[in-house]
Image: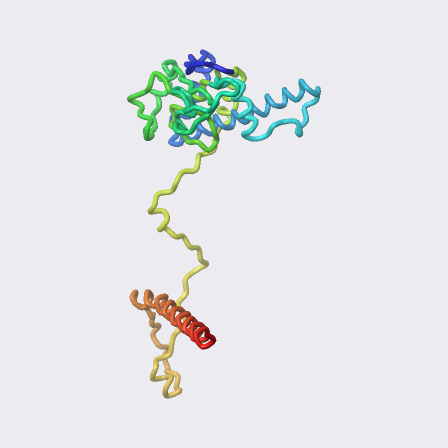
Length: 278
């Protein structure tokens, strides 16, 4: 779709109602941002796979697994059909991307001949549902300052945009493709596993060990008993030998010193041989 200016989309009523229902299902979860992102990515993959299969059926009359585009390339092909783009006339030299294009946002200094337009999405209908969110607000997504519109630059599984941008992307695709909404509701109703989160730094210092039981170490004979070659009548008191911290730290340094000395001797021998040959 070739356009000459930036597009602004008013989401359809069905898309707004669908996304609002999904938000109500997960608003109490602490990982709602990641869940919404994963739902959107999974739904794009499902829709692209279905659309690719329907296209193959129209051509050959039979849906074959070999004819379907798989993975994210199928999503790119599908989004390219819907997403408005800006193109220079054939044969024109590349120019710096104009304002309002995705290339202007991602690579403003690189000349290009085409780019997708940034799409503005009206958020007024979905903001009341977002305002009901009861979890802690994320960075760059403040519940008290909801925007009336959000720009969608691109969609990719590797991106982790703010939650508002994810919701705008869902509204956009739901407006373009009505079946997206019904599939999204089914996928959200099935439930989502907790999203893995980064563990706090103090958790890295916590080590857990399991053992069948603790036992005392074998008793050591006193030095006097070893010299006289006699065994005391009573077992010696078990002594725990603890190396001081400085000795423990000195051991690796001693090993390094030995290796450096050996390397230095080898280098000196090699240089002496070269000198005698010359």
